[in-house]
Amino acid sequence: MKLPQKTWRVISAALLALAAHNACAQAELQLEAAPQAEAGWRAEYGLGVIVNPEFQGSEDYRVLPVPYIDLRYVDSVGEKYFVNVPQGIGAWLLRKRADDGSRSLDIGVALAPGFANRDDEDLPGLEDFGPALEARAYVRYGAGPWSLQASFSQAVASGHEGFYADLSAARRGRIGRGGFWSVGPTVRLGDSGYNSALYSVSAQESLTSGLTAFDAGSGLESLALQGLVSLPVSKNWRWTGLLRGGRLLGDPADSPVVQDETQLFFITAFTRRF
Image 1 (cartoon, one colour):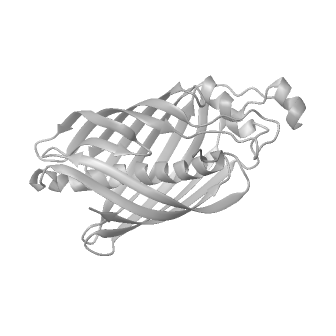
Image 2 (cartoon, helix red, strand yellow; image 1 turned 90 degrees about the horizontal axis):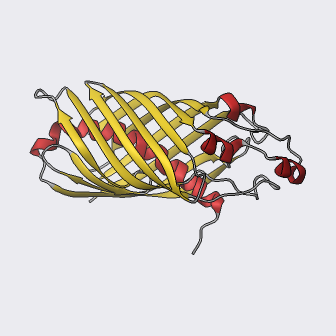
Image 3 (cartoon, helix red, strand yellow; image 1 turned 60 degrees about the vertical axis):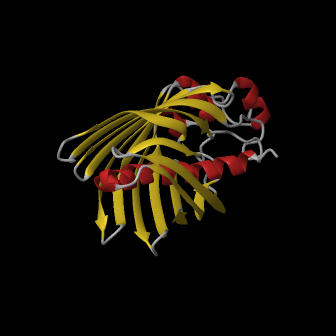
């Protein structure tokens, strides 16, 4: 069964935001205990509710329940393999740890679904495109309470056919026993292929949509500030809440496709570890 593009877009946005912060905060905080943990696969499943723009640049929001599925293989060094919707199927090829555990560096690769898309139901008269298959490289560095993370994504089949990079920094810490918080900025940059797919309006599309023709070039797409709190509610269950406020920049902000340059996002979810 083919899911509507609106459903793909909203589900992916929720999973990407939750996973990005979960990987940045939870994985790093659990790293201290990893050498004592038994090697093997860890599974986490759950259900969340999000409030998210109907499309990137939309002034209208929608509320939708979304699933969360995450599988990770952990050994004495830490996370080694992962299988989930936002990060895809991949592995950490380089995992460096300081002897005192104060610093870490991980470099990984993956094949992942890319969900950036455009639906002609939202923007009549514009060409739509569906989810892409993306080749990705991940880099993350942790030093004490701080973490830096970068992901580089290139569409290799269908979708936007472009390249984009996400760069983020976060300050994280513990809340009691088993809880944690994370807060920091994130920025996305896209090449001309990526930005054009989402924000350009061709001469033909201008005639059919009534929007002014526009050519979005490469450069910054958005800058956002994100905050996350995750707390255990029982031995195996966890509650997580994430709030993000962002602003479209550069050519994307000037695009006639965009109705509101300010984009807000919220998710709350309960997950269970197996």
